[in-house]
Length: 151
Image (cartoon, rainbow, N blue to C red):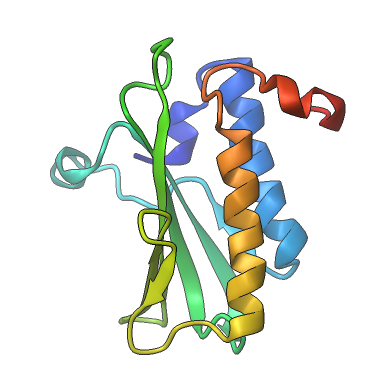
């Protein structure tokens, strides 16, 4: 589901914004789209309502990441406003203008596909993913371990 659709509380809005900041801190030239999905009924029926989805666009093909665009999905066990909601995993797919180049999931921690990122960029990407996992350790509340970081 589009990330912008989940910005319904101050905590979630802050975390979604910070998610974009985390990615831009590692890949400065990227543009962020908080609404990567079309809003027509057919598309919306196919989306996971318990997922925060956003995309990142590079101005041109990023040679290290071997793609033009990354679709990121942060998946949760249930609705983000539920007190028992937990982050289950993070998935990402890198695309050129048309075709998928690679996929990544925290389920197995591996990059798969015909054209995965270069090793240095895989490490940078994993750094972002690890920060996202920490950010959403407590999805609908402030993470006490991050209280000194302005969250």
